[in-house]
Amino acid sequence: MVLAALMAALTAVGAYIYVPIGPVPIVLSTLFVILSGLLLGSRWGLISMALYLLVGAIGIPVFAGGKGGFAYFLGPTGGYLFGYLISAWITGLLSERSNRLFVWDVTAVVSGSLILYGCGVLWLKVVTQMSWPKTLLVGVIPFLVGDAIKASVAVILARSVRPMLSRLFQSPSPLSRSLRKNDDRDPQPPLSVS
Image (cartoon, rainbow, N blue to C red; front, side, top):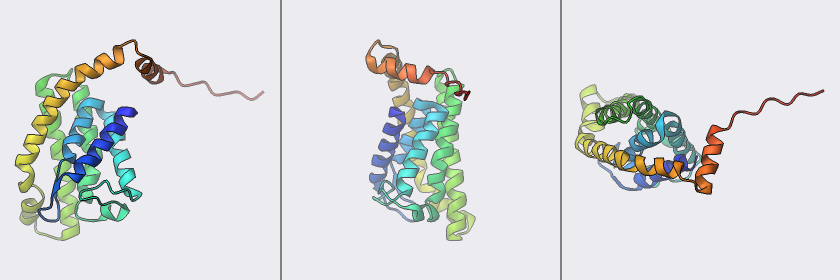
């Protein structure tokens, strides 16, 4: 849970690093969306993005340019924000199934990015009523080079950080024992009323 909260926080920080180029700004957040799937897997990657979106929905200024609130989901970037959930989940799902092979990490990142574009462009088209060529020109083309760089950085970071996370969770420290104990805990049987 701590790592999911950390990834949500990093996603929020990434939203403050943005370039406003039109209805959809260039943000660093997408790096952390993909990275959350690679590092945390499908379940915790999804949870980290859900936490990020929940914090933004209640009005905390964690979206691009220091914005927040539920209304932001109804604007031109709402599809991209919703895509964060699916992107992190798909990236994590493919990464979990890959035995941490490089080619599968790349496949996971590309798939997650395509999901993000798909959700974002569909919603952008609905909200702005632009033609498909203009929607693609505004919602995809300006991001391709930057997202390719962010995807590459995500794969490199994931491959560097995973061994450290493995050591952290295998070390005999009280923190790692506590984390393992909480993850491995069997659900308690229901209490019976006599």
